[in-house]
Length: 122
Image 1 (cartoon, rainbow, N blue to C red):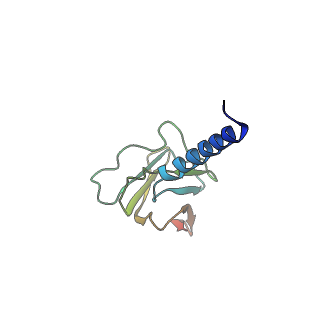
Image 2: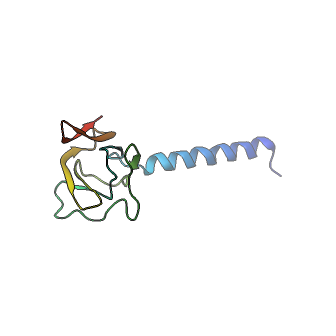
Image 3: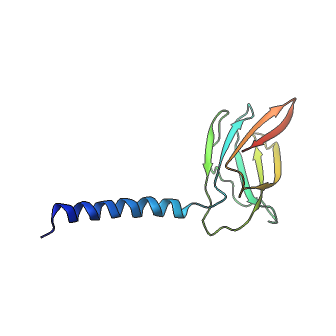
């Protein structure tokens, strides 16, 4: 029969393992995207800089409203350093940013400054 101390130790080990697994599963390129553009984003693409196409829309059927933010996570096996980002509005108008070093960026805030699309990276 297990003692209370043994059960508590097993529970603590389980919690530490669960937290550690989540941290270990995160990629070094993970970042938060903040939409301050003033428009709703209908499509979002993040692809390695050397990719030949944009791949899948990260948002799928969802959209990213103005002033909302989205956590974007990568597999921890991902090795690419530079990434390109593309957003599209409801009419298919798009803006692209290229060569974002996601190994050094944890937050990207998109907005318009002097009527030009701008991104602040942190």
